[in-house]
Image 1 (cartoon, one colour):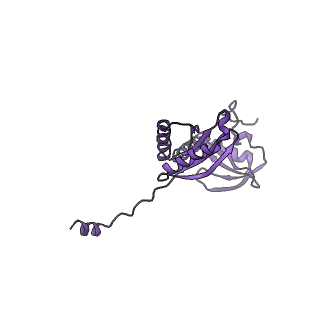
Image 2: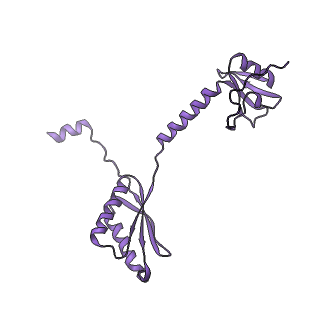
Image 3: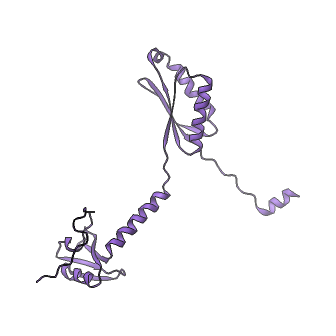
Length: 198
């Protein structure tokens, strides 16, 4: 009578990693829980070794010949993988693209308000898409839209650089601004500071 271990993961969705009875090849190269090579063994023998230790036999390199399997606690392994992914996400910096829309006839006060928004986005490290939207017969006066975009570039030249030049698409004219990375001034040495204070 064949000894069969209860598969804790039966009925759960498949995560793409073969383990325990799901490993169908006749022979596997086995690495134990301490990272030591046990050599090429029959899959059944490798599974028995894993069961004796109360651990899982997990296929880690399916494309090798023979496939490489490791004896490990699969639940702990999945937990550590999940933690690594969370740490990687924390270290990622997500740069968003914010959009500010103008009209060719935007009043000065509205322009200043929208300019403050653009400055806030750029100082926050986000890229900003500046769009001029034309309605009706305004499309004939694209030069006015271009003047608005040039004014924005001039007013934000200290904190932004133009990433893409103004381009016209249908009833809109757009350009992209990116924040300028500020160069840090080198710190003076303590001896130099003492001399300047005297």
